[in-house]
Length: 346
Ligand code: UT7
Image 1 (cartoon, helix red, strand yellow):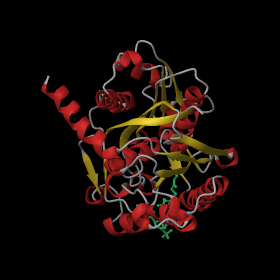
Image 2 (spheres, protein in one colour):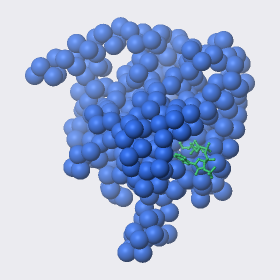
Image 3 (tube, rainbow, N blue to C red):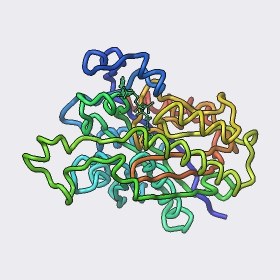
Image 4 (cartoon, rainbow, N blue to C red):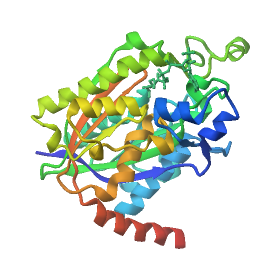
């Protein structure tokens, strides 16, 4: 059987850090509140006004090409999961295609908020499984700082900027994406959204005055649905694939709130040492969280490891993916460091 396997992981994180102490000076909040309610200590911010989501996405993809030792012209398809496109149109994928020099690729953006990377992975996998494509880039990238109201303490403390990306290639040895579940419940659309700037409420002086171009979140409602949605969908994919907690090498959860992550892990029977958590360092990077976790844990991943990826986000959207890791991360990581330093030297 031809499956779609992740064969390389790349990332981009801006250098500038916004700590809880910094936020204490901007809004009425405290390091203690943020840490205990969310698990976040700091997040990264892309400060350069000339740079946007496509920049971070392209940098993540350049790292993949270097690690895998392939040229940009070999890429067939680029899927960018984002809610912070450089522009309303054209798609950010077009800008990534151009900046990367992926002359033979087509691409599109996918809008599914925090579930964007998982939805993108499901789409990309189909193009590999069907035999249509050999190399697909799936990117989760968001410049959340561009849509946050830094006077609103209920949202501005939660999010950060960043990008993660994976390369999908065919596998015939039983590794790669083995199953996925996706859900949408649009009745939740008002609980987490940007009300203005779309065709419903186009930008106007009034929409700006009413601050409609920023993220709005009814945190309590989203929290309630997220705890249930992420745990349910993880349990669903485990049941469908006869997996119990002991058989899972790592849970890779969307990083929105440590309490949601803990509840999901408990429901799955997965111990905390097998849960990827980096929310403390990056906050919620929306579509970026899951590939950024894969990047951070790559060195520890071994061929055949069972991974369950799960997310919940605006829409509402949620889902889970079951995959068998396809390579020895420590070997690739060593090779990658050489490849990357060779690029930097040139
Ligand atoms: O990734 C997309 C999906 N998003 C999520 O999954 C996020 C889901 N929601 C959450 O993670 C949580 O609801 C939040 C972290 C956003 C909020 O935590 P909470 O425990 O649900 O707090 P709350 O909204 O119930 O607020 C409790 C109190 C309120 O004060 P009162 O009304 O009890 O006096 C808030 O005004 O905390 C107050 N509060 C804050 N205090 C200090 C809200 N934000 C802050 C803040 N600093 N930043």
